[in-house]
Length: 284
Image 1 (cartoon, rainbow, N blue to C red):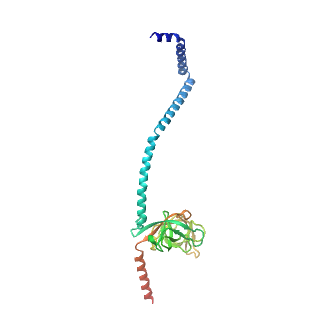
Image 2: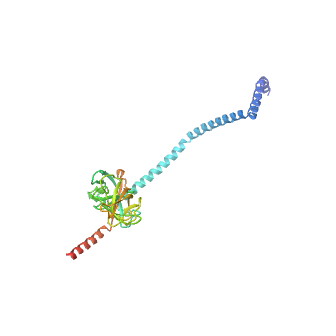
Image 3: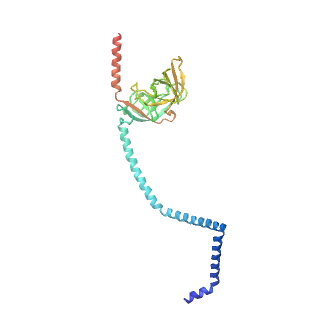
């Protein structure tokens, strides 16, 4: 105890100085607005820096826990990928899997574009599905945006598709709103534009109206989008409209397509051929 008293007595002038300094600072920051503002600004900055440093240290110390959680999430995702791959393999094996949005008599076979020409009179597209996958000539080909074309030639593992960008490819189509029908045909030039002929002059056609398949052929079901009306003009004979149509299908970047299988196609064609033969015999 005596030592403490001796220490205080020996350094009493320092304690008096510190006390007076504290009183001075308290008075300065309490009654001077500017100094008070400086104090709080500096104090907040220092406290913020301290909190930031503490947060950084805490975050670093927690990295091991975070890494374990991320690894667990990655493991779950890897397991999900394996499951999805197995399901995809099953879908590709059973290529007649039905797809929502198509009538029951139709199904889709997925395929990828492996080669394509775009700037010839008669462009062609090669896909990596063939007769081994159930593909046959005169099957329709579509993508997520709309109609692509019609299967032209088939080998075991590949098929040649005649796209809309082919002067020999003519698709029966209709205007979605009014349901007037015509024929879609391409004229060499732009890869995103085609033409519709045969729309009667009394039809009320509007710009931006959707053009779609009409289902008259057994290649495409009705209602598959093709494009939209860009310009309304007259045919050469003036008896019908000539519509300039912007295509929905992005042929320049086309990679994923689907081939449409129509299960009722053989029955329909057999009946139509029988009707044609009967008419021919009656006319003779």
